[in-house]
Length: 262
Image (cartoon, rainbow, N blue to C red):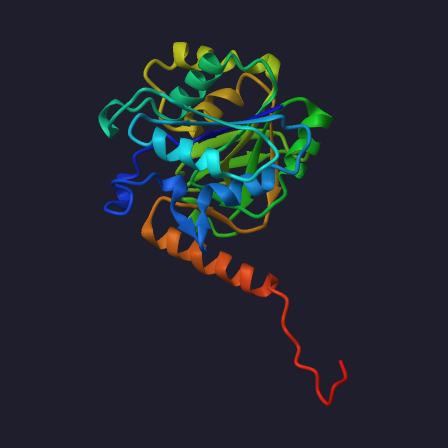
């Protein structure tokens, strides 16, 4: 299996901090956002290569990152050739570009470079290995008002997606689709079929899911662990607070012996 991390956006909503630095390399609790993602991928032995697709503006930043990164899994960075927000390929466009450019012919784990999550990737893998279907990670928001801001899934008793609506006014569920997917090797061609049928729809990956579930089996792995879609300063700050607390609680406490006895 291969892992693809799309990170080709220009993050204009986070200007000025992303004007000269890619969002996926912003620090969260003292280390690049990309590290938090790859930390979850690197231990999985089924994944033999990590690919990062970015743009011409930031390709040098990611190449420097990959060169200095201390992971067992090889990391390769490619540029989609775009130079600005106006000519970007969009999320689906970048996934297709990477598959074609890298000649990927393998099962594909896709994790957005600006989504941080706490559930183990191994759970996605387990569902995929059992079902050999398209898999999407779905965070249970447990809040119908909040659900109006996301792409919302409805699933049956098997976990199969039976409906997907982008930012519904009356959400049927509180399951938000996250940018965490596994696509089977034999179904990668569906991405191009989507583009052919939905001309010009290359931006939001949720549009692909909304089209896909009507034609192929799409299963949702529902999780309750924290998830951060870093699209605003508020979300970035919230992620910083969470991961600082996490690192602090994971730091062993130094106990001072009393009277020479521990």
